[in-house]
Amino acid sequence: MKFLKFSLLTFFFFCACTPAQYSGGSRIASIQIKGSDTIVNLIQAWTEKNPVFFNVSVTGGGSGTGFASLINDTCDIAMSSRLMEEKEKILAKNRNVNIVGFNIGLDGLAVLVNKNNPVNELTLDQLRDIFMAKITNWKEVGGEDRKIVILSRESNSGTHVFFKERVLRRNNKNARDEFAVQSLMLPSSQTIYYEVYQNPNALGYVGMGFVNDKVKAVSIAINADSKYVFPTPENVINGTYLISRPLYLYTNGNPQGVVKMFIDYALSDAGQKIVLETDFVPFKI
Amino acid sequence: MKKIINTIIETIIFICGILSIVFVVLIFGFLFKEGFAFFKDYNVIKFIMGQFWYPDSNPALFGILPIVIGSILVTFGACLIVVPIGIMDALYISEIAPKGIRDVLKSSVELMAAIPSVVIGFVGMVTLVPFVKNLFDIPTGLTAFSGSITLAFMAMPTIVTISEDAIRSVPWQYKEGALALGATKWQTIRRIVLKTARPGIIAAVMLGIGRVVGETMAVMMITGNSAHIPNSIFEPVRTMTATIAAEMGETVRGDMHYKALFAIGLVLFVITFIVNFIADLFLGKNKNK
Image 1 (cartoon, chains in turn red, cyan):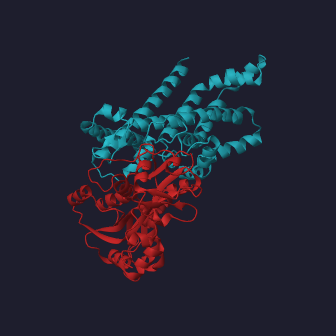
Image 2 (tube, chains in turn blue, red):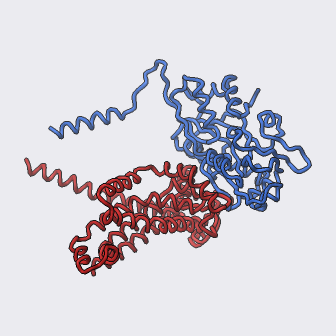
Image 3 (cartoon, chains in turn red, orange):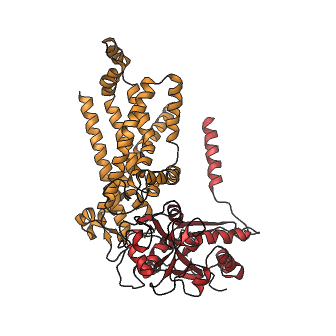
């Protein structure tokens, strides 16, 4: 008798585990979105403002992770803060994955320092030297006599790759410059933000969406003679802020059904308005 | 009828027993296959003695010396903290504490084991990291030392519960004999109880080390993840587990980086194997006496 009870229970358990079928109506199938941590907040804002997309699950992990799972077919949309690399394109081709990309806006990378740090401005050269540990003390760039703690993202992050290419390698494809071994590779933008918030020695880079009045963003100039520019949406659009990048959504083949609905919404005027509200920069204003 | 049920149950139990061995062998097989494939394309000496870990660079550099040192440093620090505290805690619970306190202590130590590591990591990041930074006046609190404290906290339940069992199983005749000969309570604990319970305590410590070496989430959040060779315990380090966890997501099956992470797994396995082997040596020695 007990055995019977047990097997019945097991049976019901497995019944409950099989996915429920949605048959038409107002309900929509779920969408899996993976990739850049930077874009996670934006996707969340979109889904919150538009209740049709209640069944969207979004995970961070970095642009590389997004591409890997799109190629391995474990997500419907990959978010990326960089273009797909040749290497990844070849892998996708080998797996018969037909990659289609959509530009959904721009992001400026802000260099964050602690509020108590007197440094307000840095040139690109100074930034490069700091992240490669050629400058190790804040007093060399006009700050207090403190050691600089370099914060960086993990190498699977599109932010990491973009910052390396833009600041360390100056867009030179043949350069081999890397972040200094002393730099701390933190697992998310949130941890970088938090360490900068509580540590006056630290400096790190995050998407503009993370900047608020608890930390300080630094103005950037090409060299000491040119104008220092603060990361604002206006400065990213008119091109005067130097460290900015486009944001993308990638799908496997031309989007169909719900995925198409989502991407159409992202590119619509309403969607682009939310891009601006979440401190990113829409591709059109 | 009864006999048939008996045989069926026996077979099921046998299969379950064998299953764990099968899984272990399969996991080892997979680990060896993927790990050794890496050494075909990359020099073993360059892998183990290399000082730079730049897997995405061109040419990629896979030197794991800094992360092996990072793992060892964090583990060693954690042991220094947790072993004395854990053993004394176990002694207090089993030998000294009055019954009321003992019950509370025992259940709260067991409760510690139930805290998820990511929660410990987060609490450590918010409270311990700034505290360590201000206390020692160092550039950042994300250091091997903070990691050691966190890991000590996590290994505590394992070490306390297992050594407490070992101490409790010391026959009461031994203790009474010692006390009857005029030994004080401390002398009895030091010379009789600790000595008799030593194999169990060493096993507890080794299991604790195993937990510390393999812990991932908390160290990833707290040690700073900087792959350079540290000069002291108050510098950021990166551990083997954190490297695997942080980078596995971006790799595509079969490429060099993916195999390199498996090779790290292999090194990790060799280290834990050595730890277990030493533990077995100690246990065997004590049994023969």
